[in-house]
Length: 387
Image 1: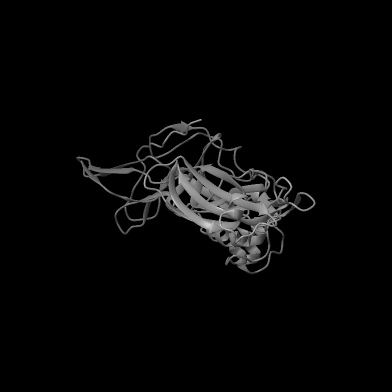
Image 2: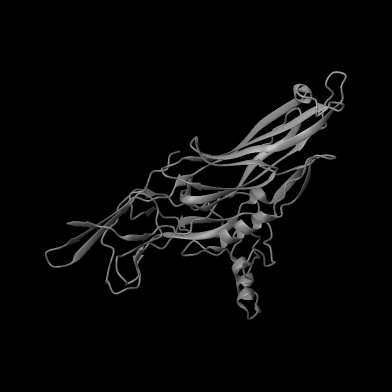
């Protein structure tokens, strides 16, 4: 029995973040390089209109897509690239608040010091990545071995305190260093920048459980009458404050270890056995006949509602407004339809399957997404999700 390598379309083009929250109307404007028809398919978390499709929906593809998306949520056989394109371009709309104002999403972890206030670094998106709903209480965020982390870092500076009888003033403030770590290993670093958007590429050479962002922010104050040209004078009387803020996300590196074994029975029939340790979208044979087996996974896109609103800290107090940027992510779930051979001249059929049996994730997904209520099995030996 020979062992050969096959090609797997393994959740290609993965994109996502975990989502939870309230429904909001979907944007209707064309932005971020997407057509109106493509943009209409993004918002599985929008407010759907009750009832049937309107009798007149228009003749254009955009009108038909908007009409359908207005009454239901759409699923896909493949992870749509629209989520990544929207997220990466929409990110450009985020701006920091300046020296006297800090802007942050409501879920951000804020840090205060003597001079630094409302400092934070908050993850916006990891691309490419996909959240797989593997059971009612089991989700896994798969990230590509090579990808990009986007985040917002911001802070504000309070009035400098008096140093004894001296009145102080702020001399400098900055983000000294922004670093990305994978299980404690530094992957990328940026230096000497103000608050705002952060883009850090990464490369994962081995399995990882967590990606963590770390930003070091500093502010320096000195007496008003200090002489900057006096050697050693101002520095010796400066007040320097430095704070480190962090944010993290649990991830799993998506790098399936697949085995494909082909054997021939005495009557001449060929049998192929496939085993993969991570979920997969489809398997293809090493031929030109196209896809051989389609998996159980289907996909939908939804915004991350944690970024629906931004809070402006400073001035007369916190003020909340609608966020100008919202990441859209792709979710994968095992659908009601079972795996099956697809078109091609191979005449294949599924002889057997093996792997753990799990309860359907229905109830953990958006209500309009129907995944069935029976248990499902994978054509793989997947990694068991720990509680």
